[in-house]
Image 1 (spheres, rainbow, N blue to C red):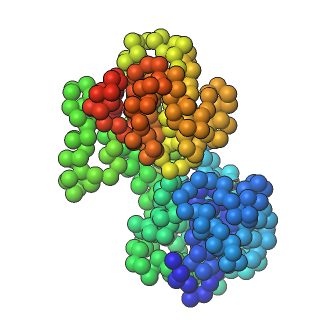
Image 2: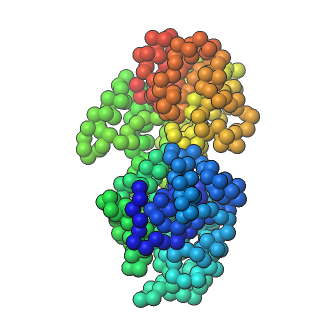
Image 3: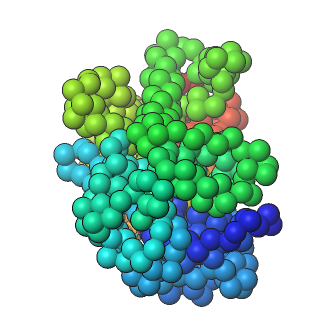
Length: 449
Ligand SMILES: NC(=O)c1ccc[n+]([C@@H]2O[C@H](COP(=O)([O-])OP(=O)(O)OC[C@H]3O[C@@H](n4cnc5c(N)ncnc54)[C@H](O)[C@@H]3O)[C@@H](O)[C@H]2O)c1
């Protein structure tokens, strides 16, 4: 995609993880001059060599291409990057703190750096997911720290809330073809700059929602909490369908035919995970408490999701003969990432599943096409890891399919039967055909059917 902005901007993207790296390559592909900044030296070193530090489809090509164009580079020197920038994007982490609210320490640290390097007008754009009120706090803090004004005809800086909606696994596609851009702003100068930055997307008629800072912040949380609710709803319905002898797929499919419902996010599974839904639902509940509003529905979703994740091993235990029946057994877990097409294991249902299997006394043999290294950092040698799914299945009494990687959809059941010791399959993603699995002599259980 090569639509260049009217005025190419100098941009600093602070934080080069999933959001920051994709934004860096995307914004430079739009013709801007981008410096990606990270505190992690090995990330910076690797990115400057053109080697992505995350697994994300297509990001390697965009990285190489834009490094070669001279419009993209990476550094740990945040001061110089901010000094050279017209626009500073914040893409640092906002993880869940112990009390449930968002931990804003990374954002605070970047704000300090911006204050120390405010050598001319800059637009400060927050892409990180931050609770309502954070962008106003950023504005106020920069005023306090620099003694400058962010209002009037000649502001020293302006703040924009530009929450990110990309999906891991489809992040590059989502960056270039988002459903919409949300831009919370107060000063017209900020809007002019953002129109330039996103000119390429405006030209292809991506809807732009211009709104206030607080509205932009809450759009992000409302969207994530709604999607988490939708997933949890269908997962709980799947449990009921299972108990009542109904088929959740036909139910979900028929529900989705109703235009008011839509078929998306109605796929039953082991419960939601990932780096966003769990922490963002918790943060929204905390925000509600701070404002004296009981976000009771979202609280229930969090509780229900935790219970649903435990059901995967409950189902397997039932098949294996009840409590204690997995002791000494070998269980192959296929899929460690929280969803397919990513190496991200943050809050992955596989973490709950594997922990529970180990607690039950099972030996876990795991496979994942991309996420093994990340999982190793968490479980070390408590788990046996294999580069091929058939090595993981070899000698197993049971198989749990925990991530919907394409390669598991056409699992060679004939071969599986010859290498496995047992016959149990717990398909937590419903990727196999139940009848086919049973024809091959497996005892098969999916979710909600
Ligand atoms: N991952 C997603 O799918 C996704 C989608 C939408 C929104 N978000 C939001 O975007 C934000 C970033 O998420 P992510 O998944 O990219 O996080 P991440 O953990 O992958 O990346 C954050 C990066 O920031 C770096 N960092 C931390 N402090 C820094 C500092 N002071 N200066 C420079 N770099 C620093 C870290 O080293 C890390 O590489 C979060 O608020 C998240 O909620 C994430």
